[in-house]
Amino acid sequence: MIIDGLLHLLLDFLTGVFVSIPWDIPAMPASITGATSWITDTIGATTSVLRYIYGSALFDALIAVIAAIWGFELIYHIIMWVLRKIPILSIK
Picture (cartoon, rainbow, N blue to C red):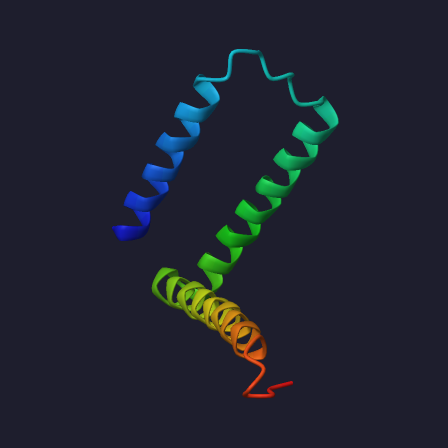
């Protein structure tokens, strides 16, 4: 629920920013739109197959574990970057 609220807040902010632009943004080229559609269709089909094979509950758990690992790695790299900036610790 928190993530959903934050995403809606971000969407509302971006909508407000793009509505306030006084000029028209050019249309996206058809090749980029087609490639984007192909990528999202492929991800959707793969997700459907994996959800069918593993079941809905296990698939959702796998996605949560993958997201947690990715988030931990990102936070670890940020903490190590900050610690490397402190010269007295001499962390390499």
